[in-house]
Structure formats: C-alpha cells, structure tokens
Image 1 (cartoon, one colour):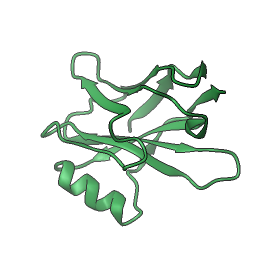
Image 2: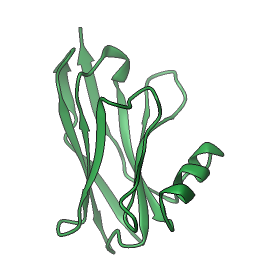
Image 3: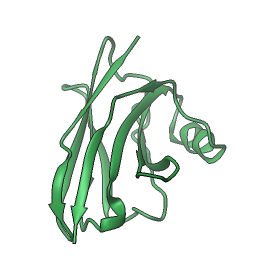
Length: 130
C-alpha cells in the first residue's frame, strides 16, 4: 500500500507560480504512473498532469499545457507539479493520484476513458487571487 502526501499549496496572485509536491511512502514510485487532478468548489474533478516513472513520458490537458510541468525525483520518491502563470480558474484542491502503469501511453489512455489510478492523497489547496 502506498501513501501519498501533497504539499506546496497556498495563496498566490494571478500570474504567479507555485510548486506542488507529492511524496510517496510505503513503496517507491517505480513502475507506477503518477498524476495530478484538481477539483474546484461545485465543479467536477479535472485531470491536470501525469508522468510515467517507467519511460518518463508526460501528459497534459490543453487547459494547462505550456503553464504546468510535472516532474519526478527518483531519489526523493517525489513528484512535482510546477505551475506558472496561474489564473483564478486554477483555484482548486489539487490531488496526487498514483498506481501501477506500464508507460505514459497506458496512463493517457486510462485517463481519456475517465479512469483513475487507485491511490490518492488528501489534497492541497491552491488559491489564485485576482
């Protein structure tokens, strides 16, 4: 069983940046996929980014492409989400999601079907003020 702990959320002004972290305990991220989702009040959960630990591939929706970057640190068993040029519509609770995955194509296919990986963190709040 893997436990995921997010950190790095906070209050930031429009155009600012934040870096979120997702640290795993219980096992390493090896052979896993890791993703970020977000949910704003009154809205459905939305996919934000994903990375494959096997091939290093990444996947983003158009809403964040070019602004958000997902990365990993093998030594720290941590995944990061660098968020730049933040907008008020980025305000949400951001959740880390992880599970076994062969490669980024498998992860992208799964997410496109509306599926998610089995493990979740408790989330970290990002608030973008205008």
